[in-house]
Image (cartoon, rainbow, N blue to C red; front, side, top):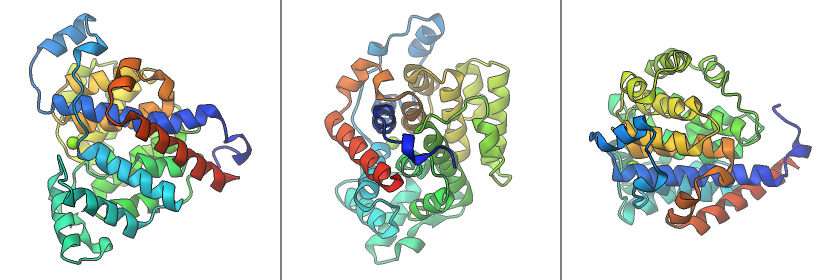
Length: 317
Ligand SMILES: [Mg+2]
């Protein structure tokens, strides 16, 4: 047990729930503009300390926020992870256009459309080792805030709808675990990677999270460290780089998102995941005000964070 249920209901905790969803959306909307970006202007400004929040343009939601919000809505309504309802919501998003959809998720949605059961819809094999579960998993972590029993199973239930791949699920578990601790103020930046590594089987995900810990210890700057961890869209690339961007300056939502973006590669998903963890750790009040103002559908996301917090809190009482 991480904390007693009695001290659960506080405004600070509600702000961590809202902060996780909102900072994830900010990361996606900012990162989407710079996905695949390899220019040097932003990176130079970042290194010189001339970087300003306003120099990043905010775009629209992509698949990351859409599927994260669908996950949060389902959990808020049911008070648990319901695979069938999640699959229904993901499919509804896909049929409405599915902006930014990843390859494994696309094939899973096609299978759902043709009547395959959600437990068997997910893509498997190497092509399913992507970050598509990690990007949407934060609400499952919030459901388990301060109550880690069953977290692994719930990550799997949410994940297999699109990705039947152990690396995709391990990467998602690492994110959900960090969010579950951060949401109750129990994430220790000094030990979180070791805690996660203790629970993972050896894989490219665990190898890269170990490497992430070494790079943090060596105080490697982001633009040197992140390419060493690899900038692509596999779970073993995106999840460790997102942890790096959060853990280098855990108290700064701004730094988590900006360092996620200036490195290039899969910026929207990296910034979305780093935002989900950083927002849960810091609370919504520490998201830069300009981003909080500009993120599309801010009020809806804040309302959903509050509903989700109440639903989870009621289960703890
Ligand atoms: Mg995306």
